[in-house]
Image 1 (cartoon, rainbow over the protein chains, first blue to last red):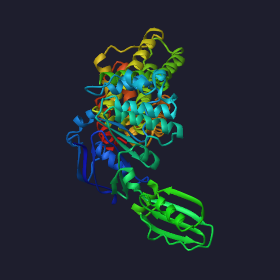
Image 2 (cartoon, chains in turn blue, purple):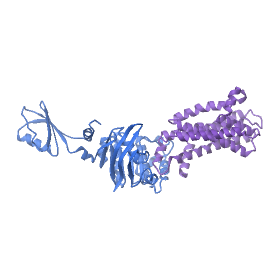
Image 3 (cartoon, rainbow over the protein chains, first blue to last red):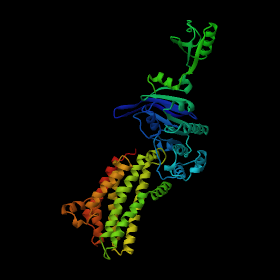
Image 4 (tube, chains in turn yellow, red):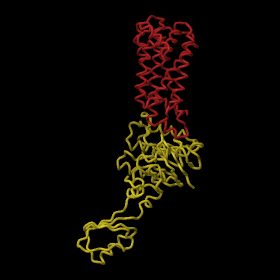
Length: 296
Length: 231
């Protein structure tokens, strides 16, 4: 069953089209990514789904509920971490969790969350005194305290150092392992590649592709080498090869599947000597450039 | 809702601004109180107006604008509790704070300083209610218009001093130019201060000034509600 169903979402601000027919659906237990550069409509999309904004057109169903008409019932069952929100400076960690737990009909025990998210020793610390990573962990804990079926995490790791980002990724995997569907908004390729089961790529208010990160990247690879002699090489007929380009002695071969093995075998058979052989996997970034015709 | 009120109360007690709103008028009262005659009817109304003015013009808008700026109201919009609840809780709390400040002033003035305390309780309550409502309305308008907590703080202070001057809280009314004093009487803080002095002097508050305060409270709070942005 689809946990989130979005169809034909449109939103215009002061004549500027921010969302231009966004559609996607998120299955139960998925980590679903919304990926795109800043200012491409990711946050507007997710804020419409959360019920914070009203779209000009389109339909949204979250757990079968309309975020505008059934807002209260929907909000009972979702957890949200917003970009750039803070808590009151003097609010202590336990007070924040206790307070947010009181908003929901069937909250989780916040003491459990405190331990689970490594905040037990920060229990009595005021929000202003927490480190960036601790604040993020508190925000995730607050998003989970209502016992939600879906959580929305918007640019969760922006501003964190690499170690803290990796740690946060592990935490997000744990959230899903606990049976919660996760919608992740991100402009980090590595984050999406690491975490998401499926990704919607947004560009200029449109969804240009929805697939798994591997599916988006495809199995296209690139192979480069330098010819040691002046031999002519004919690689076009080798299985899997999709393109060959040569500049002087430098050769770049692109292909699919196991083309690299076929190419090396071909070279060996024809006694062609090469050096500096490298095989590169295409990245999500390459895929994005190919999809949108512009660099990320 | 109860827990929200409880947590907000705790936060208010951790807010140095709240303590200032209690202590500044008390400080003024005690400093000038040493030189008043027993049965004085001027100093206490002045201190009360200052206390309510500080809460309404300074503390209330600063708190609300900071909550919006920090995204606290937006975050609350994603929970089953509406952000309007937080505004209601804050208004009630600030009202409690204003009442506390005034109770403190009345107690100190009545016991230690021997100042006059009026006996017409209903009139005092009415004047306090309307005066507080009009000051809070101005505070809400500042909160609605200020882009962030710091700006709200600045606007509040910028408004407070001219209003306090016009109300005769900075220098006595009879030392103000006649025209300024006349105009001042019809400002929210001026009408409040004058009505308090009337009650303290044992006369009934002027219906015109009560109407002026009620009108300010109604018109300005409607404007604030229309202009208020949640984010």
